[in-house]
Length: 493
Image 1 (cartoon, helix red, strand yellow):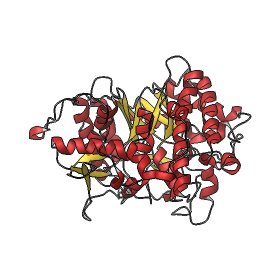
Image 2 (cartoon, rainbow, N blue to C red):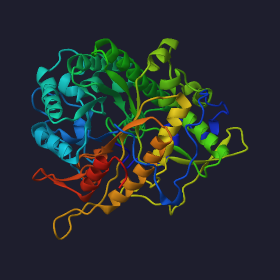
Image 3 (cartoon, rainbow, N blue to C red):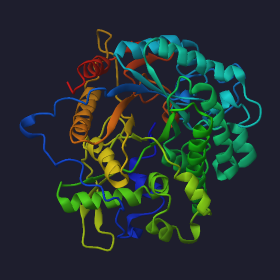
Image 4 (cartoon, one colour):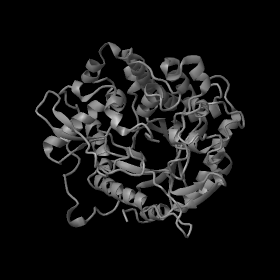
């Protein structure tokens, strides 16, 4: 998931450098504009999503599974972090979370009740390799075998994420986690092992979820596990090692997965939006998108760090080889985008960098999570930029959603009309994108149900289903009915 106490305002710094160091080097893609810049005139919408558009929901292992000490699972960095006093807002932990490990059959029925045809989940690395490397734990993989069989029996296509932040604690203790290239190699070994055994049923694999978040919150600000605050050169090396882990995992999935297995990243890119849709501002937003994502998606798709990124990093730049860059840019089958909000509004500017980042006014609206600014147009521009800049032919929106207060009304129901408002507006802009030919193939709503929301504990609720964490009762919110209608009609309702 996205930033909780770590505000999205920090994303320019999260990229590792500020806009002041950006060069005027343009994106190298020569692809023509994706369709005309048509407007949604007279309040009308394009006629639905494309036939075969894939509707799904998403979760992650650590946030829902619980059972942290069962069937041979080893500890993760989050297990240690949540039991460190003062790290979690409500002093809770995920030892039980949603008890999904035992209730997965019930939870699959929740997905089926929505009419969703796809489910994005993550595999817990320490369940499969309790020490991160070495001997695998058969009981750990058995759980995912049972889950996959249950999903397929109900006509739900599984999309697996190999890493959603639950690094085996043993690798953190032994190697310093992602500070070491050996962790990148260990991740590839784990990914290859899982792909070999599950790709008979899992045809789509995401490597790493949100490189930017795990690096900067975990190793920069200390607001996520493992809670470190590294120096800039150390942090840049962690960034590189994570990107390298992605590339090595892509190669491992190719080598060990069944023929036809598709693989790609799931990244929370810095979303840059033209403040006003003029050709100059649109071009400026494209340049900003390429440069502000230089440390992750740009290097994955171009096989090089941008000149501006390296110039800004200077002597703090990561150490790497040409072979590293070749590995990082291993060919992928799709790009997953986690889109929640605009990170920057951009205007063209007569300056060396060619654009300016417009500040957010104090009055800019936000959802229940104060970091989650309401900018539905992010759902149009994020995939549009990715498709145009890098000629990406297959895109999935791997996360989108919002927290809400979600208090039961007097009749016991949860009327989360604020979440419905958010989803309706974002999906309208996604519908605009697909109508113009932006190749978005599917959408995974975050989240299926309320869960352990990282450093916010259970204080923030993102689910379509409310969870009473004392009784583990799941209850549909009004937004579940909204999403069911969207899926059934294949259009915004």
